[in-house]
Length: 136
Image (cartoon, rainbow, N blue to C red; front, top):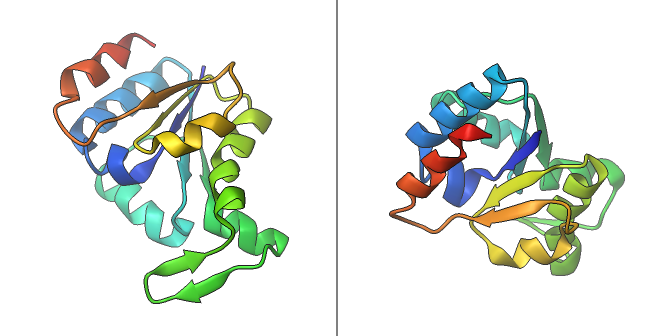
């Protein structure tokens, strides 16, 4: 399987569980794609600090800087057209044939192909449900 994981609201909200999940998934031979809005140079710190296993990564910011999308840097991050931003995770997942993606923001879900199961991770008390994905 190809599994996508968001950082903010998912990995950073449930770091211990995602550490365990990603270790087991990697051991079973699954691909683990970190799919984040944050620049990868910042995002990788969260991934390493929480010992998250992964095989691939995608940063919305880095991708759009690389392809020349008009963006503005402000004190609180990068800004660009909202629809282009929201479509970016789905475009990456669709191109890479991601089977399941975990995210805390429902507004991204409409841009994922129906072949990808999008799991919306709520902000708290979701530990037991997440552990059910150990069987993937």
